[in-house]
Image (cartoon, rainbow, N blue to C red; front, side):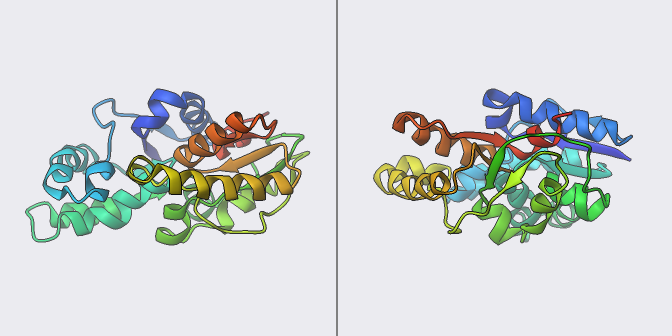
Length: 237
């Protein structure tokens, strides 16, 4: 099929390897990948801050660009949840209401797309490291995605997986971290401590925004523990 890949703005600017990995994986599976340059932001920051009129101004062109997409795939639980769960709410009682529902129905988070839509779990990846997994809040609570990334990691040759003992937010939360930096930092430190306790070499997640926050705290602590997007692990051959 033709997959329209939505690369979130922070991934495009700071984590391009995650986006490149998604493209390479999907192309190896035989799919055509298109990545429109015109859609860089889903509008989540103003939406979460209560500026819904401004959010609609950003989101309306996104809807228009995605209206004919066969499948929309996003390597981010938060941006995926924005389009799949919150666009119908954002555009309720507007001329774009029906289109928002249609686009939402064709939108997938990357790991869920591979497992639930394509039926793929084994990508022939090799990653000889001990890893743990962080479930981003939007992906876990809004989209209900938990088993898909673990199913994919279970097939990676050489990978030693260990679960975190707690299932809390990393503390980033987009604008939350800017408005409440002390709380955000405290939450992140709890997550880092739990990850360190596992003895893992890497924290894997399907949300680069969470990994950015966690890696920043780990680096300031002088920790050797590293973060990596799920797509980058799955693209290791």
